[in-house]
Length: 99
Figure 1: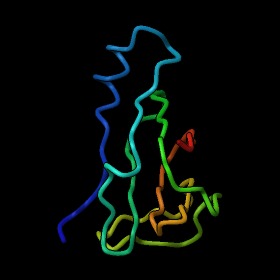
Figure 2: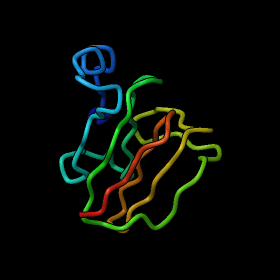
Figure 3: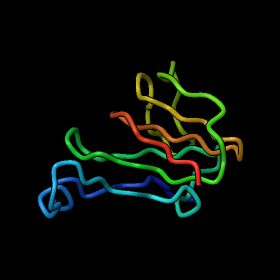
Figure 4: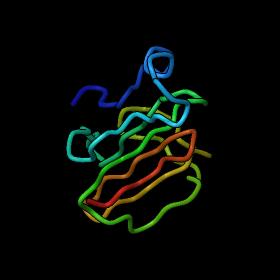
């Protein structure tokens, strides 16, 4: 499988937001993890990202030494591990909404 990294065009979306509290909302089911179940979000420092998920977060914290199956070093990034085996990594905090 090729590089499966979720990317958000932070500058464009943030500048189009009507309100500074607007956020990009992604559905966990729409994200494509790599072969290890990892998804890395690159969203910029100022763009809030919300993840809508039907699965519960089983664990979260700051990643220890880890490189994804696609070769991205996520050491020190925030992570959110879901009950379906997907783990999201992000430089900034991500708000998780269970639906």
